[in-house]
Image (cartoon, rainbow, N blue to C red; front, side, top):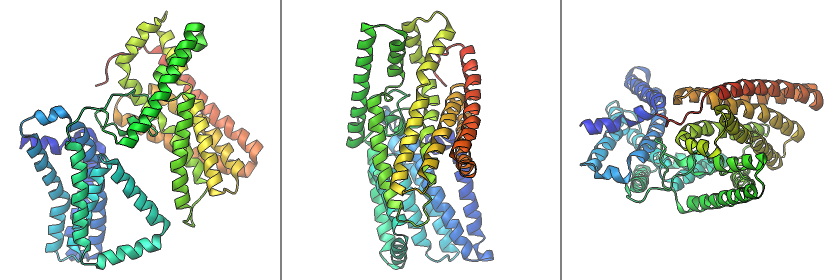
Amino acid sequence: MRAVWQLWLQPCRQLLVGALLLQLTWLVAAILLACTPAIGMDIAGVAATLLAFGAWFWFTMLGMCLRGLCRPESFLLPGFRPRLATAGALQVAQWVLLPTLAALLLGVPHALLAGTTILLLASIGLAASSTRYINLLVWGLFVLAGWQPGLAGQIARALIASPWAMPLALLLAALIARLSLGAMLRIEDRETDSSPLENAQLGRTRVRSLDGTPARRGKLGKRIGAIFDGTSQRAMEQALLRYRRRPTWHLRMMLVRRLLLPHDNPQAIALRLLLVAAIVTFYVVAVMHRQRFNAVMVGAYAILLGVARFPQLGRGMRQMRPNLADLYLTLAPPTRADFQQTLLDALTVLVPITVLGTVAYTGLGIVLTHAAEPVRMLLTAAIVSVGASLTALAVHLVGPEGSFGRGLVDLGVTLGAMVTYWGGYWLLGALGHALGGGVLLLVTLGFGLGVWTSARREYLRRPPCFDAPL
């Protein structure tokens, strides 16, 4: 039982805050369900909603942990599969069987249907971190439900009234669990490792497990990754050829950038913009049928998508510390500060790349949503993205080492960028594009440059670290 207990504790060990919150959600739902005879049957619906929410996210976390555990060498352990099955049965018992049995004993209506629905959501959560096409299919169903909410409501009511609803939910749950577990338990060669500084948007770092090992990808993901790798290889070869012909400081810095940021060459940037634009176009066209869609939110989404790169940059720089020792010996800088300055100069290119992506996504959203004030949106997004990207780059280079601290920093930067965008949009509307834009540029750029100058001074003061992170 010790091995089963350790398997059960994996979400708590790797995602402590999320695991504690979800277990607290389960406890609150259990208390509400126990209070059903005293309060009424309405409280049982609240408990079922909490259990459904918690089961979905708990099994998503569980799948992320299993992706790191289910390696080829793990199956050499004695009794690994039976103990994994026992741990999974305990998880299902906690989140599905025990609440359903309690609801039946308390006489809650539709208790069995609610239990099978929670089981279906748990299987979808498990598949969300291992079987990408199931996750994409579920996302598409939610988009269609938002497209036609009236029709989705009629279908849901018909399913609740149908006697086939519970067998269908059980069948779907079993099928989804079989597909996701089959992908996890399949023994095959490990995916080729990739650079931790690859762009997370549509890249391989997006599908890494919690312990950093690359996850298995489908045929489409492998083809997209091969295209990105081809652009990186061509860009590296061109930079190396130019440097050999004329070894200047500028071409040397270009070579370092091609090495550290393989997916941030012009071809890869253009390809990434096209792929993200295709996904955004499909989503916006789908949700445009909802009457309450606010076109101004497009700029906020674009800024959110832009600053999402920098948390991955902070994690990647820590994972690349042992590899940076080879770069240090290759460059042979006169002082340690010169090596730190080289890294700063190479990574600063992410600021204009982020601004370019934010402006491109905002412009695409303006065209798709037929925004009433496109200049105001575009100007606000461009100005805010400059200060936000400078701030995000600075704090993730010299920020906390622990995952919890980095999460708080990421949350603060993201919320600050969102608040600044909405405040800047209001400011441009109140003072005009020229005066309001000037004030917004002065505030955001002044703050961003101040944070970046302080972080740069601190980064240059620190000695290079080549120890692997714990």
